Length: 458
Ligand SMILES: Cc1ncc(COP(=O)(O)O)c(C=O)c1O
Image (cartoon, rainbow, N blue to C red; front, side, top):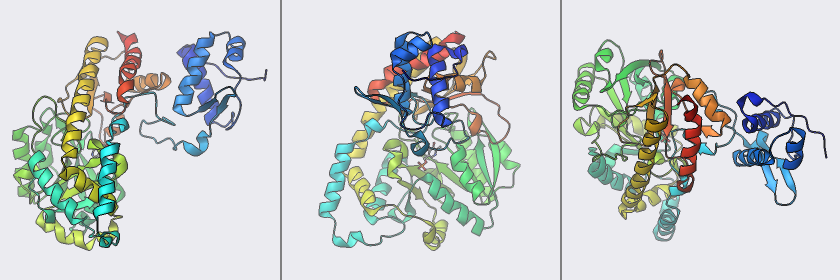
């Protein structure tokens, strides 16, 4: 038996205390990669705990990527220092994915249509001419722009032609292009919904534009407030506000469009999850109401996978020239992936995939809402039945948002609060609960673990 000194904090519970002590020791390098851990039996003896508790803690840390269990050869410390991402500041302290992951932002990787996507790639490789393996049109390959124009028109009421579409490697990268264009037009200030997705709006800030926060109420962005501001563009999420989850009302849409016309300002419509609506047909795009005033952006990140790095802008005519001039700014997207997406949409595979996913995510959304109603009535949900997340605001001062997130962290439950989403002073606290990340077979267990985290408040 080897000596093994751990600084156990029992106040969070025996198992959570052991997990925390091991995590800290591994992160801080006191237990370097490759270190053989004592057997669960000897830890249980040394620290007077049930062996099952130690086994559960080891299993949890193995899932999180801190430990590697070798059949018959003990458990060793994994090389987290190399493989773990640096801890970002924005409420995401996980060195590797938690076991029950309710953070928003990613679809279930297990739903990715590997087989049909593979068939699409194979068809592209066998049917495409050799010429396609050279440099492609920087706006994106013609077959994809044609198919997207048709798809966006019928599914999202977007007024698009192949000439208006430009393919990018994610909404984030298309915002980089827009920032350059705005600056060349003398625009220095861009309004954003507050709260909104920090990663996305920060692109404008990083590229030298000033971000101006505008509050959002139950109807959408407060256009009255916008009228007081001197801004050249505004970014909105009308179908499903991120993160509050409300749908912009028809009145607000009209008011926003008339504001933009009167100010000669651009509206950027981020339609990141508009395909997912569960209580009725999806709401059509804002862009369809004024294609020369609204810049529409959509992405494959929610409906298929963020790993594809595929997104698209539908541009007003006035911005297509600047686009041609800034093509050097774009990294471009693999022609093969673009052609595969064109094939995938054209054959009806995307519609089939979305239909399946809607069924799965709708059931999860309902389960999560029921859990919150029963277990945590102090979290108030006012989100539309749409998208891949719901917003739950705290209505009880017995616990704070950061305490909730912290409590989740120690129980292996990934939670995200509103805090990183605010640009101005926060007016809501609570959780932005994504229900799409866990694998389908793990969702029931994930829900149980979330219930444990929320339960103690009654
Ligand atoms: C509000 C919002 N917009 C856009 C995106 C998609 O960004 P990208 O296409 O860069 O993956 C996301 C993804 O999380 C999002 O939450």
